[in-house]
Figure 1 (cartoon, helix red, strand yellow):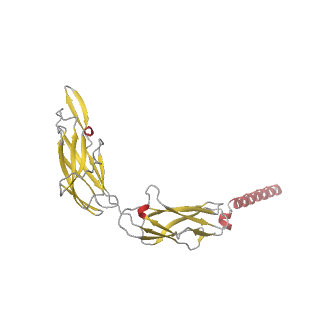
Figure 2: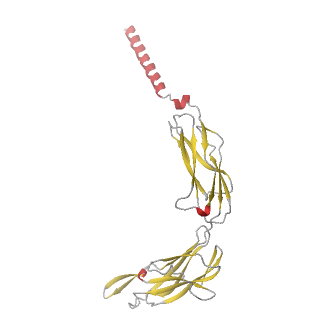
Figure 3: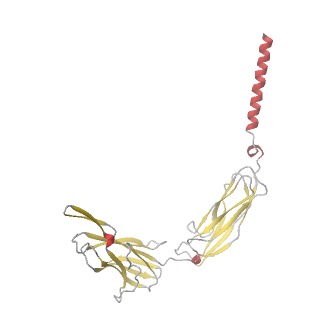
Length: 288
């Protein structure tokens, strides 16, 4: 009986050792035991970009490629970052190169953006982030020069009178939308008092919009003009807030002015809203 128990014990111990040995083999992988950091080589062509010619919908890109001599069994992530130069993060965007396990190369783009503010010529140096844990990197710098500074000289103006009023008559309630009234946005020369003829803000749209640009330096009067009002004969007697919004993209010139000089009973009227002073690409807006 003792011999039988000893045999069973040895068989059990042998099975336990065998199972333990199999588990160790299952958790041994090349990525842990035999992995050797590859050396990554980056390549890309230096470039000179004229910012004034950039199409904002399709900005220029510079391709950067990363390669290794042989595939490895892990993904290698290589973020591209600014390493020098006078440009800043508003001037570009850069991606991350990912060499997928089993591949030997991959690429991504550096995109140069149109900023529209006053910067002058700038330089940009792009390299790889210095925290790549599973690869070594050969030295690399992509040099980009951004010339021909683009400066946005357009003041975007919007005249908005959106809203509504409810009117009850003979137990019937009707809703009247202010946008059925037709306002125009006119621009007058403050010196001559003459309309400049800029009628981009004289359509049937609600709101009306105009890009203020191309006029000589000087002072100009922005005028809200009521062109047509289908509610004038209804006697609704409701005030119609007319709001003038302005913005110069990439600059701090922005704001809003509201006037309450019109009502649903108004039949016409040109009302000054603000004075715009143009000095080159700089605008100053002063409420009337």
